[in-house]
Length: 113
Length: 112
Image (cartoon, rainbow over all chains, first blue to last red; front, side, top):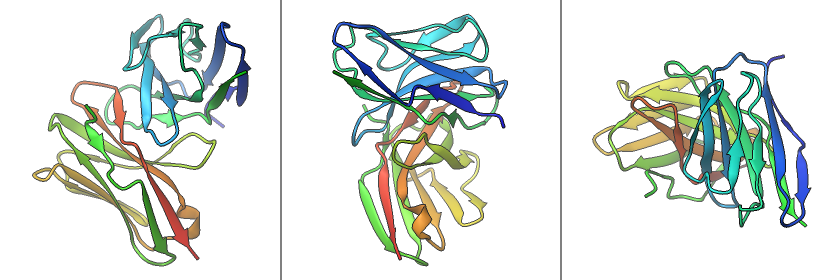
């Protein structure tokens, strides 16, 4: 079945370390997105990419970095510059044209040790 | 500036009754609205959407209404079922943009 796979489900990081969250999709979607969800909050956009080798900052990009070397993959790195990294991270993708909904993975919960 | 507002953090209804979830927006330059359903520790699941050229869209038990003059969006679930218990997010996409902006969500509880 086609879908979006995020791994790992749970991730722990020591302060001062960078950590990379994986997102892979086999839907042949052009656009991919990273969101962050905090308790009682909606989803906030971190980064998005509409095409391979191109990406744009979202509303809360500080302390994060991404790459889009392949259409299927859009990894997110949470750097040590992100002061409050504990959150639920969601990856999404969409075909990128017309009124099509974004489809989401099941998320990665990142916690600081 | 939160451009999409869900003012009710929670809603409780009886099984079989109608659930009405509301969403207001503050900017008229949106062309596409969506509703997502989310269970704990899972990603949101797309439910239903509506384009700004319409005022109603229906899919089974789910109907979305768009009142452009009031800048108001609502999701009706009829009849409500216990499995509908989840957090519901409304989202909008602006004209010429692929970005979605989400509300903070409403937690729906359907009691048996």
